[in-house]
Structures are given as structure tokens and as C-alpha cells.
Amino acid sequence: MQIEIETISPTRKKLILSANEEDKTLARKKTLRKYVAEKEIKGYRKGKAPEARVAAEFAAAIETDAFTSMFENAIEAAVKDNNLQVQERVSVDDVKQSDDGLTVLGVVFDTVPEFELPQYEGIPVDGTDTPVTDDDIAAFLERLRQIRAKYLPLAEGIPAAKNDYLTISYEGFAEGGVPLIEAVPDAGPLAASPKTWCALESDKYRIPGIPEALLGAVIGETRTVAVRFPDDYNKESLRGRDVEYKVTVFEGQRMVLPELDETFAKESKFESLDTLKDSVRKRLEIEAAGKDADRRRNQVANYLVANANFEVPQAAFERGVQSALDNLIEQALRSGQSREQIEEQREGFLENTRKYVQGDMRLRFITRKLVDELKLDVTNAEYNAVINAFINENRLDNKQAEELLKRERQTHRLFAQALRVKALDVLVAKGNKMITAP
Image (tube, rainbow, N blue to C red):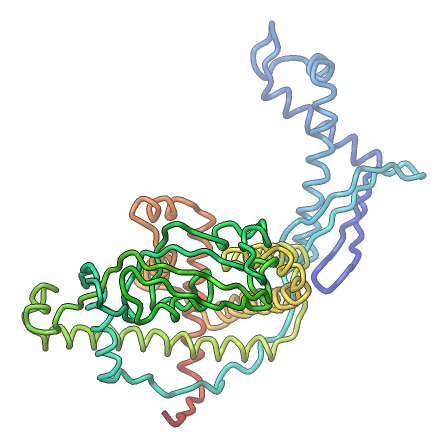
């Protein structure tokens, strides 16, 4: 078997394998012996049928299997003999017959990139720890109060306040007093609604300006609200348009917060208010420490990627870009952007996505090499920490978590992530911590 290796790029190789008649004859003989041993022929005990009978009955299959095994064995040997670090097999050419009687096959591989690790000891990292202040604790406790708040009907004559929820109706009118539904037929519920909710604290209400305009309104009151839709509004037909809305308040609910006292603490299953505050402080300190650790890992990761310039495997890169781009577009659609807006930003999306995927892939190869050089491994506790973080981040329930751990490909990724975290943490510990002013 003749084998040539063509270098297409630093991470892409092509094997060109050429088999002569002797190679093909030997492959047919080996395959025929295998068929004789494995196939059952009527009238003969297994493995005892004459070769000629087996060859005649399974002629097409023997020919196909012979060629497949011949080339697969040759590929495996070529990869091993030439120490090719294969990332993945990208493509296989159709089998061709050369003018001199050789059977030729081309196989394209992407290979693991070859590069030198940058200097990884003494990387500058931020050594300032994020403090947990009394204001942080107060803000957290305020959120707890809001979670346990009660909502009571807003009495007539009482002005609506920031945290109130109102039941309203509205109808929009375009220039000249034309109903908005006539001026902009595709406005839908943005043109009018006979009954809907409005949270006065919302800064993302579907019609900009209405929550603010209703502050101080009372039950039964009708207000005229002048609205100018932004030029980048998600509904293209309303961009830049001036609309006058007639808004009527039918009813409302007022948020009533519980007192932050000993009773609140006991209802939260703490012995006292001080015990609750201590628990909140510890929780916030753990969260702050986690964010500090993530920040330092990112600083190390950015340094490594910036100081190790190498080409990444093309096929995996292209898949990664497409997947990340699809996710980015989906997020943009969920945020209310139109497909027209997204198309206008597509080139920017693509450029940012390519940079992100390239950096992420480089970091994976760098940390993989670091793991080998530093002879790192992860403990069960470190692996479980990464799994739990993934479960919490994706809000998986117990059943979904169990299914996750059954998927070998996913658990492999999580283990690789645990190794990456371990490698970055080691480099953070070896880093040059710079203390910055708070």
C-alpha cells in the first residue's frame, strides 16, 4: 500500500492511499477466511463450508468488506506510523482507479494543533477580593421582603405608586386622531387592549412611557399619554411613530411588604433576625468569592489565548460558529428584535461569534496541554462541583439531572470543564496578584 500525506493547513492533512493488485488480493483472501469462519451455509457445519462456495454466495459483500478493511487498516497504520494527532475525520473521497491500475482513496483529517505553551507562571491577576457590605445585605433582605409581599386592592382615590399593579385599558390614535389599528393594521395588541395588566415599576413595558405616565393615577381615571416609539423598536411599523393613547385605570393592587423583624426571621426558619443576617452575609460572601474566582480564571484564560496564536481545527470551528450564531440569533429574537434587525447585524454577529469560538477552542487545547504538563487530575468533589454548577445554571430538576448523567458525551464535556477549571485555578495560584483600589 502506497501512502502519501498532503498538508492542506497546519491542522488539516490528507492521506492518499493507493492499493495495487497484490494488496487487493490479500485483502480478499483475509475477508474470505473470515466469512468462512463466521457465516453459516446450508448443508455445512459453521466454519466447514468450502471457500469456493462461500466466495460464490457472498461475493459482493466480500468485495465491499475487503476494500473497507484494507483501507481502514492502512489508515490506522498511517496515522500511527506518522504520529498524526487526529482530531476528527473530515471527509472520504470516492474510490478511484488510476491509469496504472491502482485503487486510490483520499481521506481528509483535522489534527490537533501543534504549539508551544506561553509562559504560564506569574500571569497578572486581580488580587482584590470583593467585600460584602451592610448595603449588600440590606438589598438582599429587601428582595426577600418583596418575595413574601402581599398584594391588597388599591382603594379608590389612592394615587398609584411605583410598586403597584394596575388593570387598565388603552386605545392608541395616530396623527389626526386616526385609530392606530387603522393607521398601522399590523399593530395588533399595541393598538388597543380592553383589559391588561401594567406594572408601574416596569421599564420594559410593551408600550414605552405608559407605566411612568400612570404614577399618581386613581381608580376610574383616564389619562392621555403621548408616546413616541423608538427608532429601534422591535415592531418595525411603529418605529419613530408618535401615538396618543387613552388609558383608563379599572383597578389596582398594592404591594405590602412584611416588616423586617424577629417574626419575619422566624417565618424564614431562623432563630432571630441577627441569625438571618449572618446567614445572608455568608451566602453573599460565598457568591462574591465565586465571582472573584471566575474573574481571575477569565484573566488567566484571556492571557493564555492572547499569547498562544495557533490555528484551530477547521471542521470543529465551523460547527462551533454555526451553533453559537444560531444561539445568538435565538436570543435576539427572544429579546424582541425582528428578523430584519437581526439581518442588519448579521455581519457583526458573525465576526463576534468567530472571535469567541476561536478563543474558546484555543483555550480548550491550551488547558488540555497544561493538564498533561502539570499532571493534573480532578477529585470527585471538584467534578461534582462542576456538575452542580451546570445543573443550577440550567435549572434542571432531579429527573433532568439524572438524564444528564446518563449521557456519556455530556459527562465527558463536564469532566473536561472540571479539568479546565483545575488548570486555571493552578495558574491563578501561580499568578502575580495585583491589588487594586476598591
